[in-house]
Amino acid sequence: MFQFLTALWQGHGEGEAPVKTAIFDLDGTLADTSQDLLAAANACFDRPWLTMEADRATAYLGGRAMLRVAFTRQGRTWTEAEVDAAYPELIKHYETALAVHTTLFPGVVDALDRLAAAGWRLGVCTLKPAFLAEALLETLGVRDRFHALTGADSLPYKKPDPRHLLDTIRAAGGTPETAVLIGDSQTDRDTAAAARVASVLVTFRPAGLDVAAMAPTGLLDDYASLEPVLEGVLAAPRAAG
Image 1 (cartoon, rainbow, N blue to C red):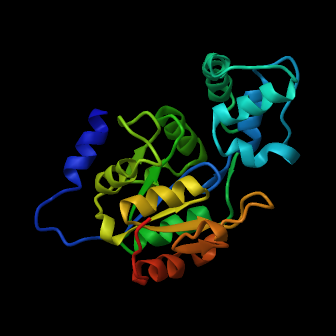
Image 2: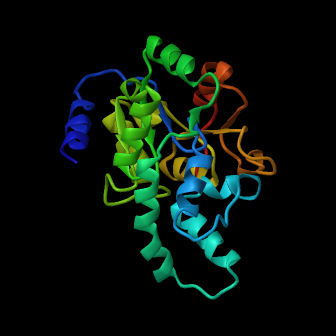
């Protein structure tokens, strides 16, 4: 928390001109974490109730979402208390096998480096616990590209609360008016809309997920085209959520 508040203070120098800021979601946006997440959830049970074929999209919704599906497939009545009880075990399994199969999506590193060279401030706003997000980005070799990182437990609030995004933008040294959230879900779109921040959703999520229907400010098909997409959405009229 001290590091986050220090970054937030440093990002608010008086008299500084606004800079462009790109804030990224992590799971399903920067990296395909689905296989390792599903493995961690399956490790909580006596057999693998979840599969990549059926549950890749669920993996990106978080640990509790995966546990709910696994409990349901067991054909018995379950409670949220059971989900809450199993969640720490899932986190323990995930922490020990964080990046066995996880990879950055193609073009991520080059895109981050191009943005940095152009003067953009970069950050991560994720629903992953912060210590796992930090560890994963370190393992993938890109943590040093980001000026700020906030996770689900970094603040008293989290996405879709717009303050999670707004505080991440400020911690990265940016301002909402010249920031974009790049994500992959309705939660990301709704968070950005509530914060009056432009949003871009990636289109390379699991088949059948219609991100265009979520009405983000823009869509990203490939990280090779990230800059023109970001510039386009910043130039677009800003609508309320």
